[in-house]
Image (cartoon, rainbow, N blue to C red; front, top):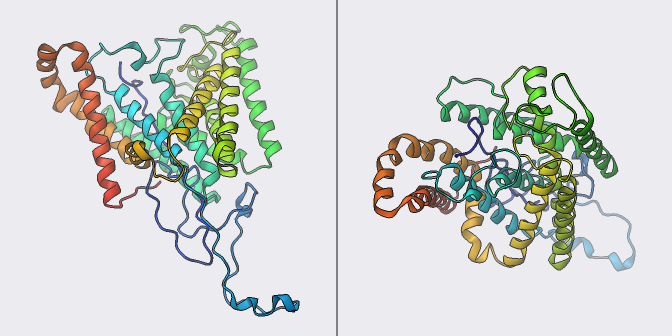
Amino acid sequence: MSEEQTAVYGRAANDETTAVRGPARAAPESAADTVRSGAGDDPVAYPISPGTGDDAVTKPQTGPARPDAASPADAGSSATPQATPAKPPRFYALDAFRGLTIALMVFVNWPGNWYLPGAFGHSEWSGLTLADTVFPGFLVAMGTAMPYATRTSWRNALGRTFKLFMLGCVLVSYKYMVPMDIYPAGILQMTAIAYLLVWLVTRTPRYVQWSIMAVFFLGITAAWLWYSPAGVPAGSFTQDANLADWFDTTVLGIGANPENPHGWIQAASSVYIGYLAGEISRATSGLRRIGWLATLGAGTLILGVVLAVVIPLNKYLWTPSFVLVTGGIAVLELVLLALIIPASSKGGLLRPLVVLGGHAIVVYAFSETIVGRAHNVWLWPYWEPLVTERFGELFAGALFPAVAVLSCFALAYAMEKLNIHVRL
């Protein structure tokens, strides 16, 4: 079936830190996205020091330099212009990964019929399919972009969270033709809260970050295994009795949904896995980058597989094993793309994915509105019987989502050519 009945997919983006001398304005990037970076672009970007908070931004001195007493060796050096710090190379593999994930999202969200292979549909309950890895991949991509961000103030972080959350509410209202309201359930809503939680955590020193995330993750894991509220046995993961639905319905008084608040902290764990990948990517390059990213991805995946022995993989419940396995898969996909895409190119043969991932917010909104209406009302209800009769069920099932993906790419390509970039 199509994507969750009351959920929409969110995306994030990749931003590189633009290092400039003085107040020169940075040139616009080629890829704009849901958040364009984990924390945002700045029209004037300065070199970033190794810290994690806002104070980590070191602004260069402007105005004429004051002559100081210097050794004879320094004589005349004031006439020599300072070298402009080099801008770090853009990590195009991240753009390509986001584009691949968007393409998969559109494909699995709008099938032509129900005859596509099972991998393109979500698990009925516990288990893992290709479609189940799409949204966690976006969360990891958003986290990977965060260490590259230049706008990291409270105002920017809270503003981005608010805009993402409200955009999610607007698109849910349009998609399901219901009155506008503040919906807690939705992919963009979940993305917004996960981003904010990780942004708050990453304001602290690294050892504190690790401690906070470990406490949250281990605490939720322990609750799944040993906490038993009224009517829910400890360690129960059935559709009729589980901790997530109990929390949403009994504690919060809302209907059960995969993107409800029960999964917000776990979604933040996915973002933080991406954040670790982003720190590795920003601090290293070449084979060293590949090696450390592969270690992170493989280690996370192995931990998730081991944990799945006692806690099943379940997208609807956002179980800890699901977070680790999908996070590890996402990082390893990033590694594969980094191996394929030459560092000196802008994507090479995978440039279409880079372009698609660079305009994710517009592509997403387009897929949830125009593509959705074409699928449900305008076109496909009339064409599907004709295509099925002439070419068969499997062809009909793949045709509409394939055309939808191509339409999304055409939109992204036009925006790229026109230098139109949308940021939140």
